[in-house]
Image (cartoon, rainbow, N blue to C red):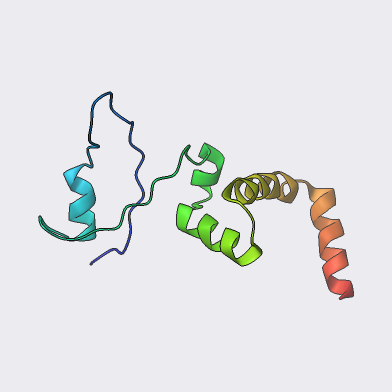
Length: 100
């Protein structure tokens, strides 16, 4: 099965070049000489967002749809998790949604 994208985190080395593990190319089912598109973002996602399976692709889609910077989308998704765990807030939100 061919995957369309894979997310990885790498450290920027002291010298030139960036090493992408061979496993990444195997997961994408591409070989030497293939053309790939690389997107680089500073900073990674928090552990909480990763556990919720939030991807950079999803963040980019939300940011484009809402015309918001990436940082605002990440902040919102992080706060959304905190609010959804609050039972009083969840009940209030449900009651407000039912009004409309």
